[in-house]
Length: 321
Image (tube, rainbow, N blue to C red; front, side, top):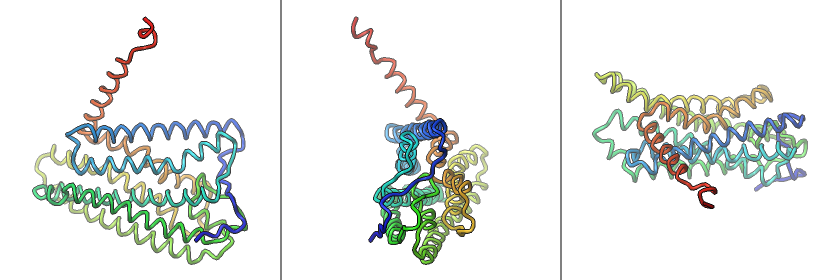
């Protein structure tokens, strides 16, 4: 399936060749990674432990947090390690795995965001039938479908990319293995790859965007008819965070995967990649917790509980005494 040609390893983007700046890159990515892990783990724990959050909306949100942790764990740790040991290398097999997992988690996130839009549509537009439309069996099937569809979609792109030869260069202009950058350095004819990537990517994004757009047309038309301003605020508070993440994720991903090769630029590519691969996992917990009173309350109780338990842990001085 894979054509390794003469390349046995690739060289990832180096943020700087100055040692101090490499260590700064390591520290910055470490802080981003730890903040992402902490925020998403808090949401997962709150949803699991708080009975008030045992509903489809928070079930999807917890799954989104699992995806965010998985997504960012594929790219940032390798970049951090390279910065720490002053290296740029990634093996051919490691690059294949990274491409497969990045596409899998990115597309699973897109599918899940689409499912979350439908969940909000069902909750706001059909509240009396919500428990029937979004029962736990349906929710489980939707999440399973997101994972299976994304894995199959990733197989197509990964196999189609690594059937190419890489004999001209092994330098990737990105801090992780990314399909557009691999096509750029291939010495094979990538015309068919460009077509497949554009057609499949455009079709997938268009389908998901259409479902999300139509869902929110119905949602906003229903919300505006709610007589109570408090009711309208509560409905909007569960939708705005989702819309922000969708717009950021789709716009930056579309820029990266559907633009022509003539538009490639290391600076623009890096910014766009950070916007769709690093920023969403980082800010998802912040946006959702800021706009959702139930989640904020659950997180406050969880943090209070953790703080109480930590203060009760006996210190070494007390143990010795």
